[in-house]
Image (cartoon, rainbow, N blue to C red):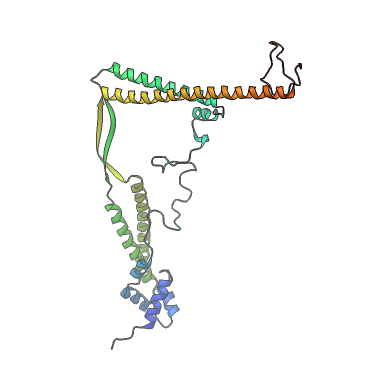
Amino acid sequence: MARERNQAREKARKIWLDSGGTMTARQVAEAVGGTKPEQVRKWKSADGWAKTLEESKPPRKRGGQPGNKNAAGAGAPPGNKNAETHGAYSTVRIADLPPEQREYIEAITLDTEKNMLAELQLLFAKEIDLQSKIAAVEKAGADVMYIDRTVEVRTPKGQERLQQQLEKLEALQKQQDDLLWEMDGEKPSTTSQRKKLDKLQREIAALQDMTGDRQRDLEKQGYNVGTVTVIKGSAFDRVMTLEAEWNKVHGRIIKLLDSIKGYELESRRVRLEERKYNLAKQRLAGAFEIDPDTGEIDDETDDGGDDGPEI
């Protein structure tokens, strides 16, 4: 027949685990009642309370842990973009733009003609710039090579050193926990125990700072650059690329000119309809506006002819 397990032993284990490992052996012994701190320490070591507590904790996440204040008062100021990758989804504010870009954007109006003219001017400037670059490449000669792109071969950075530091930190924390339990006995702690505890605490604090910095470095610099390959193209390839872009810009200019022409024709049609409407309105009223300079009917106004002579 199996021997019944000591209920006080189980009770002590539950009390210590429920406290999250914060209670001392003396406190556990007092909570159980009728048990000495030395016995509680033996139970803790034999039954592996610390291991059970560690396994019950959620997985440790990278970076600062809840309640950690190592970075208190630090950090990037509002609007800092150190964490950006490509920046495609970042928030853009007009106030953050350079003065010349901000002035250009603020000068944009709802006037269709002005907006079309501004876009046309930019396209012509781009076309002239491309023509200048094409001329410069052709002048340099056909033997000149140009860098098209640079290819980097990167490999993930090893984290063996970080893992070793984390394992050492865990071992030191266990030593500290065991030492605290020993110092919690009935006998007063010795000088050597206090020195050992002070040394352990300094080493643990240093390792915590070191591993935190190491994790942040690995997040910022996750890869090592192995080889760098520079791909170059001939002058002919460079001219072909520039001319292809010039053709695109020139096509946009032609399309925009057609749009401007269509806008002007539509504006004239609308204006003509307005004049027809004003003339019909004056005819129905039986009173016409006369231009004093030409003597002709003025169909440019729609005020009903209050200021001009009637016929």
